Length: 394
Image (cartoon, one colour):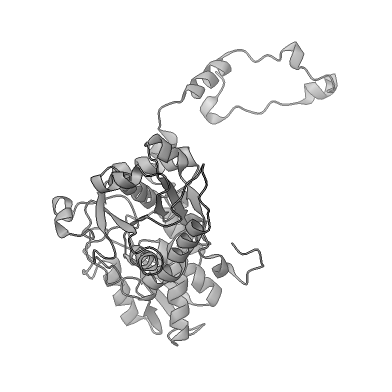
């Protein structure tokens, strides 16, 4: 982040850290470097801040947006909408976001807090249905004067934002971190793993790395079961059309900004909800990273690929750098059943048992812990604080 005073929050978009995932790597027996690109540290909380800023600024340069008059409409799974609502709040444009019903309440709340209007649409509606988030956005554009859809699915500034910012940031972090005897590094991005939604993120990062840094970098795309983005199409056949819970990745159509060319995305891995959410818990409890569900998809996809024949060559080579894109944070999902199960319904720890036993005993203050500096009158006036709700005294 810049040490200087920023003009507005858009200056804090991107510039996110690359963090070692050493504990996870060690638990899996990986000799390579496992690195997370942590995008929830961007101003709006996700990797989509980058494309929102880029699309708005490009539309301004092209004269398509007029402050105080233009209405920005966007169909989104939420994070692009949040980025757009933030940018438009700063720049003075009205915003309407169309959002499938399955997307979290937190996303809607954040959108409304930023001043956006939110229209929910049926999750099961096909992308080309008039009832889908895309179909409703197009209808609103026809009906509302001075409205525009920036269209993340087709807008070239989507992949360009990642080619010009996300990719170069990853390259710079890896190249500028020297190899040492204790932390060997090829000083190259050897493998890049990312989930695909619109596909702009993985396409743009791939172009940046392969064109300017390491043409031999292996780019691994992660696509949820039920989606059809993975290539070849046979990878999608078994679960095509199945509903999945994870948000922000996967689609039932191929967006224009996604390159499925094997020269851009070398290999695809299909992910499940169960693997994704288990990986979220691992990232939180092992690495202290408060990430969202699609970050779990990225990690589970990376780990799945690293046990393949090709992946094991990387996994067993000290110094190889495997970068995993972690798109957003847990902020947007804290009311979701899958998160509440992780946070509130897990198996009691050994420490929980010790706490319960300790609180069953009568409360006594040992003589050697008594504080001589407290006068008797002060001690009598003190009112003990209640125990935490999860460990109430009996």
